[in-house]
Amino acid sequence: MDITLLAGVLLLALVLAIAWLLIRRGHSRRLEQRFGPEYHRTVKEMGSRDKAEAELAARQKRVEKLHLAPLAPQLAARFADEWRLLQARFVDHPRGVLMEADRLVTDLMRQRGYPMADFDTRAADISVDHPAVVHHYRTARDIALRDQRGEADTEALRQAVVHYRALFSELLEVEEAHPAEPPPGRGGLLHRKPATSGKHTMESH
Image (cartoon, rainbow, N blue to C red; front, side, top):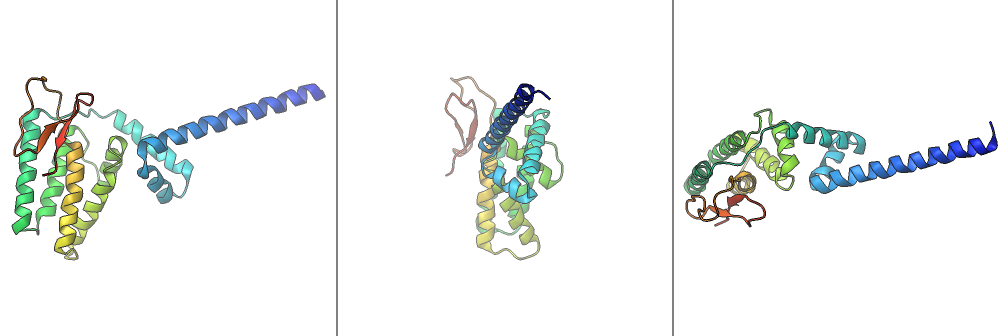
């Protein structure tokens, strides 16, 4: 083979390799920025960056096909009421509240449009748009399972309720209302987010 031709082929191969590497790094960076701690958790769990990134990309594609939607103001207010009552019951009767909290969160997910698959799939779906709170879901679930085995004390139950509340607050998005008509709320649980987001959520009181 002509030396000049060989050099050209090698140079082209080098350029393509560099381009592939840059594209790959860009893809990894975007996934890491989107998923945050969930990215590193998945890498550790799967033992491979390639496998983890394939899993995270698959989650994105799956969630993109879902018909997720915010709640109507009245429905959001009903959920806020139920959560407030749940927290009030916890003061006197902490046992059993975690099952109610898990049911309420699951019902909220269903109303938002998430499919009711197994827990791991639900958590994976949540991680796509709400990566900052998915660890709350997993931690609360772990404590709830311990509670079912009689291994969780009252402080652990309290922590689980806090974790469930973090997820609940994140998911309690309300469809955009007319600026002059704030959505209905109960006991200050709902409030309007800045106009740029067009969402509502729960306050911590």
